[in-house]
Image (cartoon, helix red, strand yellow):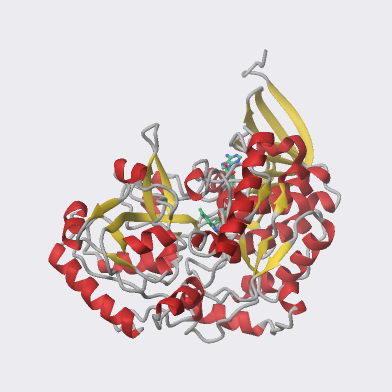
Length: 577
Ligand SMILES: Cc1cc2nc3c(=O)[nH]c(=O)nc-3n(C[C@H](O)[C@H](O)[C@H](O)COP(=O)(O)OP(=O)(O)OC[C@H]3O[C@@H](n4cnc5c(N)ncnc54)[C@H](O)[C@@H]3O)c2cc1C
């Protein structure tokens, strides 16, 4: 019988706390550099938000881009960041990141199970900012065969069910397009059928899908590499407090199912607990739109309750409070579950497709729906009068609904009935009916749609310039718009009822504000001096972007890179940065 009052002791070189990209990158690297590594994860399964993510990493000058002939001097992405971050640009850290990123990719590509696919056609978010790129600054984890994890596949966090089809992840890009076109194009139907049948076979044999994609592939490949390199990955082991010898951090106490374990770590501790997306007091303090914290519905993993930030503060670390935004904002809808709880569904994909608008309760548009999720939310916050609940409605017609789906309500042939019955999806035969069901100003909504439809047919959004940046257009649907004769890949008319709406509220993909660190990911004290033996990674580290969101992948790219840098420093092999 375990004795919870008994404290046992373990020894290692590096203790990593948290098993997302921030933690796993450091753990794998440190083990490959010869350190004995323990990785402690609080949840029953490893992977955190990273396992739910798109798996895209912003890594300018990466080797896959270079191999494809996209070669840019460091000054290009540096200048883009300088323009985007303004006063908050930290050139030293930015340069360290940009110098290290390509080397980090080389390291993982050549020494581990993690492989990458290129993002050579993926533009930066803000195409009008000088030095924005049209592609080549990002990478995604390549699909990974879950069987390579052996029995430990059971410990891999599965995807958020609401974002999947029967638990199956869908890779972004061509694969996702096949799913949207499955009911329209025989080739897409055939591709999707093969994928679904293979997935069902996996469910029968393994009780889960084994063809892992996106963030799930990233975590699985990193975890497989960690295990292969001897990292001791322990789940259900929340870190409760840090151990110190004078000012130096020397380990942590873990609360394990068998009782407390003191882990003594010769080279230090890396905090990578995924920031504070579910820490109400910290959200209340740092997010003005969430006065009690509860008004912010993050789509991040629920175990991310700010532990790393609090642990860091006990050792003298400081959480930055001066960022432009403390979280990576995203519109989120609340999906009722059978047990009475709500899943937090982040709207990352359908907003830019032709035939959707977003309106406030006044029935008016407030933003370019095809811009990034963060910009969408910033513009919603700016459009609402102070004190008004943060909410908006995504509105589309029947043809759009069956082609792309709306949030957790899936496209044809999946039925809409359950999502209508549980109140997630609102439907009206006319726009007036829909407006009434949602509590939106009906006259204004009809005028908005009338104006929008005319603009869509003309291909020009006179109000918000939708479809005018490379990022907008990539997120739109060029082929479908062309088929329909719509000049703008992000704009189509909302033509024929029934019409549908889903309410979105304030949420995020994770948090930006974190422990202040230097370029080696060492946590800094109040005087700006490194605290010996203490590192922060992932979203426990204050974002290099200082609360700005210049491109997709700006959390996972730095998480991977600074994890790699931290491990080198902890191993006594700091990189010259
Ligand atoms: C749907 C979705 C898509 C996204 N897509 C992208 C994308 O494509 N690119 C991108 O850059 N970002 C993306 N993001 C954001 C990104 O996933 C997160 O910012 C990132 O995963 C954070 O990594 P992390 O290592 O800091 O934390 P996580 O991956 O969340 O890992 C933190 C881990 O720490 C554990 N933990 C917490 N407290 C303790 C404790 N006391 N002891 C031990 N363990 C603890 C948690 O349980 C968790 O497993 C996406 C987010 C979502 C929700």
